[in-house]
Image 1 (cartoon, rainbow, N blue to C red):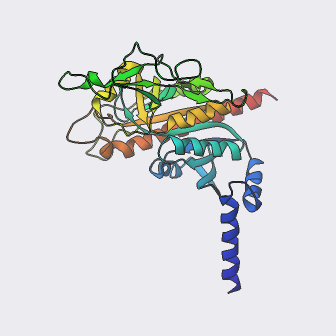
Image 2 (image 1 turned 90 degrees about the vertical axis):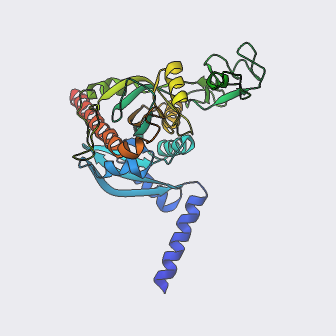
Length: 347
């Protein structure tokens, strides 16, 4: 009876500790102790479907330490002797941003790697390819223009630190099957308001394209000759061997894109290749906190550009998830080797 009461009280105390959103008691002690073994490389992963291949990877060694906080689970381990923290973000930009900010706030993080699967807007790439985008954007922050106004008309609140017509717009009338105008009119793409940690508080900056870390990008280019998985089983294989490739741009939105017309628009207008739902959230937080980051996204479907009778993601998403993990692990191996070489030069 005493044991049951003790367990109940302990659970109540821990739940109260986390419900107030501040670090107290045992959780604070665990975080403080973990940070003594840092800094860590943070891995932000959209869901368990994409995390499980890493947990099963022979090069990931779990330390058995797990810290649960604010609805997130932080898993500790090493990849090629590199201390890492894994956190599942959940679907969408808000979840990705929250998970990344918690990771950077709680722990000593030297850099962030984000990986997973994505749709493909680039007709020159193929399912299974792993893309390394140089820049990321959030492409669903819009100013929706009233019907009757056009490109020559100013937007409400247009001006310094306000809405802009500089990035570009989508005209719905261009996609009417009967060639007529459309009451939905135009949407204008807008930059995010960002507040860098080294800037003036409450003084906004504008950012649409967020670049990945230049050192991480340079290092990742050596991965382009990697061999990737191309078969699900003995009878189902990709028609084109997958590759690792650097692309100019990727984009995120809280939209699952499965529409050929919009896919083509994004590629033609912005030269976008991977399209998905989380990377820009990770990118924006890392950009504001001045923490290096990079994203590896394996293409699992054609974002609406494939057959009208089937969705490629149903068949190849598992293979693509595995390929994103293979590339991520190899990148961490390179990162660890570079760090060790720099360490030797200091002696």
